Structure formats: structure tokens, C-alpha cells
Length: 388
Ligand SMILES: *Cc1c(COP(=O)(O)O)cnc(C)c1O
Image (tube, rainbow, N blue to C red; front, side, top):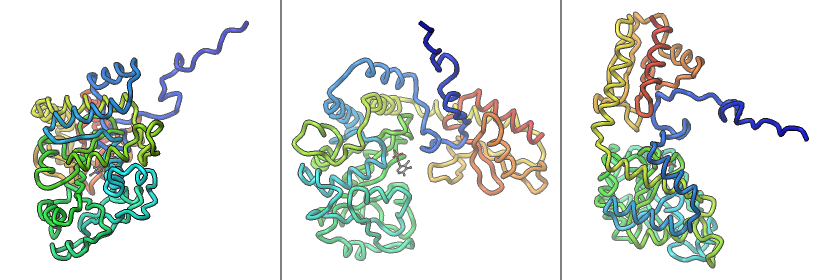
């Protein structure tokens, strides 16, 4: 008998076997780069639950209650992300707690099937409502809408309003309080996309206090899985979300709508533990790490002519603000170091390991959000080699 072939994982790491190069991510939390880095505590929870089987419906139910308890809100349910949350909340607003309707979706015959969004609120993720079978109706233009015009758009076909929290202060747009007061008088629920409103953690419940009926959150922004998140909100509406959620597909009377959005038990506990760690963490420790790493990189680059080095905050809206510092912005002067920002970015990306940075005109910025010290050192060394 010949010896079995050697197992490939004794030969090379999985990324090597797949031929995929790890990159140094100086951009921040992006789904396309893998989201966040899971902590040892989160990893341990996943490992623990991997050793046990559970009734997934019970785990989802208890995990939701646990998150609701942490946030002091009525009800919560884990979802595979905020995009999935938009799709599920839309389906819930159409089917309610009716099992037959959940099964019928995305065929919306006989159901309310319009979701309203303000013109100034159109954004990348609003299309998820259409996946549930709803029609997305834009009210007003990107310049704005007034309250009367918004109210006139509500009809007996209106299932829900989608309100992205990060666009709430957009000039010309109606604020959440105004939208929710109008919607309440017509019995229409408001879903707030609060995907990255997890800092400070009170911000999530605050969106409910300001008039949101449901809020969806993404766990990628609080150190959880890239495919995790949750919805919080009013208990009666959350019962409707349960009615379209993936659990009990095989055992309930109806084939529930959300089955393709199923989650692993490992991911479910990872969302819970990541959020628990996030809520209990002292944010000043995180901000101190960002400052220290920004200073490490700044020191490495000090004295290179033609560069202006500025500690800054790269926001989730992808703008630059002075505080709280989480990145080093490098502005290339006209007297430049002989290479443009674009050329340096291309060279960093072409190197090994590839380094991905934020490109913004003549500015190149390095966000510390998910970087370890060793990676910051590699960035400093590579930049010096290119520029000094
Ligand atoms: C990332 C993001 C989403 C999508 O969240 P996922 O959890 O990745 O599905 C939705 N809305 C906003 C504002 C986001 O930033």
C-alpha cells in the first residue's frame, strides 16, 4: 500500500494554496477588504460554539434578547449584516406576521409594496428594498423635499420609509424627527440604516428615541464579522422581522422568505461577543492606539522633503476632519518628492505585501483602524524606500 499523498495544508498556508495575497489594509473598515479583525475573545466564542450543536432558532432568539438587554431597547434580532437588515425589514413591513405572505414574497401581490426614500437620501444600499419585492419610490430631488410633499407621497401602498442615519443632516432633507412624526400619523414604520452608528453605543438607541421604528446595524464596524449585524426596534415590528427571518424554515408551516440569509451559529455568537466587547471597551484606549500608530508613521517619514504630514480623522463618510485622530494624511506639495500621490499609491499596491491606502487627489492617507504596529512599520519602511 502506498502512502497517502501529503495533505496540502502541511505544505502551505491556505492563502498560499489559493494563490491569494494578503494585503496591508490602511483604508479602514471596508467589506471589500474583509471588514474588521476579530478579537481573541470573539474567536474563542466561535470556537466554543463550534464544539456544540444548538437549536439555531433558540440561539437567534436569545442572542437578540441579549443584545436588546445591552442596549436597553425592546427587541433585537441578529442578521447577516445591515444590507440584509434592510432587505428583511422591508419584507417584514410588507408581510407583517403573516406566514403565508412571508412565503409569497418577493411576489408582493395583495401587500403594501412601496418604500419611500427622500431624494437627498439616495445611496448605495437603498436597492436592497427591491430584493424583498418592494418598489423604491424617491420623494423630492437631491436638493431636498418639504414636509407637505413628503406626506403627500404616502398612500395605502406605502409599506415603509428608509432613512439612512448618516444622511440625516443633509441640507434640504427632512430630519428623522419630522419624518417619523408624519409617518406615525399614517401608521407607516421608519427603518433607519444606522450601519455605522455603533459609536458611541448609545447612538443606536438614540435613533429609536428620535423616532425610528427599526434600526439596522452592521457588525463590521464594531469588530464583529463582515457578515453580521442586527436590527433593533419596536417589539411588534420585530415580530414581523422574525416572521421573515431564516430560522425554522424546515420546521414551520410556511417557507419563510429570509432563508437565503441564514447564519452560522459561530457568526451569531461572534456578533454578540464583539458587541459586548465594543460596549464595555474604553474608547479612549482605541483612540490612544490610533494616535500612537499615527505618531510612529509620522516619525518614520519626518524630514522627507515635499511632504506635509497631518494627523487627521478619516470618517466613515470618507471625509477628513481634525479629530479624533485615526490616520496620517500625507499631502504632496508641488515641490514634491519626485513622485505624485497616485504614483506612490500604485507603487505601494504593486509591492509585496501590497499596501492599500486612501487616495484623495494629491493626498494619500493611512488609516490605523485595523492596523497592527508591525504593519505600520512596514508602511513606514516602504514609504521611506520610495520617497527618501
Ligand atoms: C457597510 C454599510 C452597509 C452594509 O452593511 P453590511 O453589514 O456590510 O451589509 C449599509 N449601510 C451603510 C451606511 C454602510 O456603511
